[in-house]
Amino acid sequence: MAKQKLSIKAKAAKARRDLKKAKSPGRRAKKAENQRKRRAAKKAGKNIEGKDFDHKDRKFKSIKKNRGNDGKGTKREGKKNYRTNKK
View (cartoon, rainbow, N blue to C red):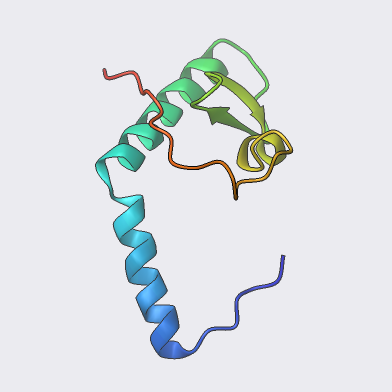
């Protein structure tokens, strides 16, 4: 995918929006859960190279399938509330 061609002002605004989204409580919880799951899977000897944890299906799957909504795309995905395991 080609890099976005943004003006300096637009690039700065996007960076602020992206950071705000990445630091949201839900995103932080998913990130922390993903790290716990990855560490546990590696410890158990599983090969998770090139895979992401899918919070909807609760399992590791290829990055392409996970981020592409299993081939359905993300435009019609809508807002979902994924559950995360609190530690």
